[in-house]
Length: 134
Image 1 (tube, helix red, strand yellow):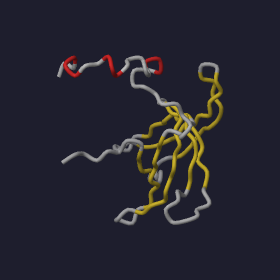
Image 2 (cartoon, helix red, strand yellow; image 1 turned 90 degrees about the horizontal axis):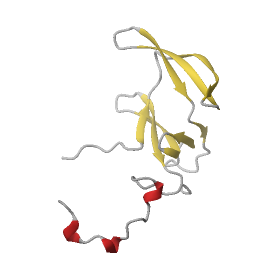
Image 3 (cartoon, helix red, strand yellow; image 1 turned 180 degrees about the horizontal axis):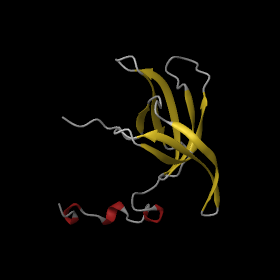
């Protein structure tokens, strides 16, 4: 049995023990970034402060049908630009959450795992089946 693939998916739940205590612009390496400090508690009850950096904005959608996302937006992630969609859901136990889906934007250039300079550098005709070491 294969494991569930949750790549570019997630679920966001109500932030019961979290409180934004500070928010504003921070210069990071010469770039103005919007950041926030969130107060939360660990499982053992210890108060800690987490530092967040804004990576995008999500806006409510005007739904045309039941399958449309409730919200969507654009993000700038570590791996590049992403489109994000959120759908309001309720678990079998009656808990509200937001299901999140991500995908590269349609107009984003395709990236090679070896870097953008490596795309198309090895013609397929130059690799013979007997050269594969496994």
